Image 1 (cartoon, rainbow, N blue to C red):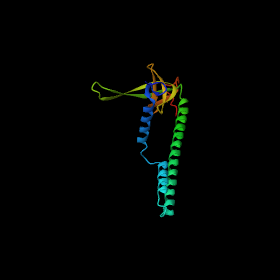
Image 2: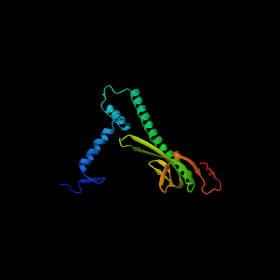
Image 3: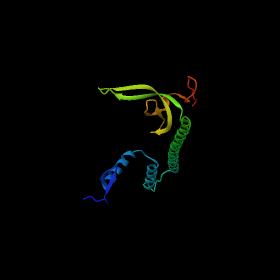
Image 4: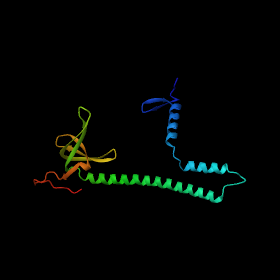
Length: 182
């Protein structure tokens, strides 16, 4: 009988703790098929431990292998650093864009709303309509920056910034809206 001491609850499903841990170990082993710097170092140490003491490895070969290990470690560290820099730059870009778009809150906007659906046979159908409204906010959804628009039809939309055709001041006296440069 399973007790709370030997079970684990993941996303509302209860598993046997040992079986769950074993399944995670197997999944990790399957994804770690590439050699990394730790595997390279283990191979090097094993090679040194098992060499013939009467005919040891040539020093130049050992130095070459150490240089390869050092190079591998530097490339791994560089890859991690570039990944971190990439995340920082993406976050900065998003922050700047949100700041710029926030200045448009309260302004009028025209955009094209594209809807993907399926017909009665299951074939994809794409429809689009031109809408107008007032920008009420800015949001980042699944990494994409969108403006929140209260449309003239009374609905709230999350418009992609790439679908915006015009941003303008509301309540101007002229017939033509004043275009706001973004």
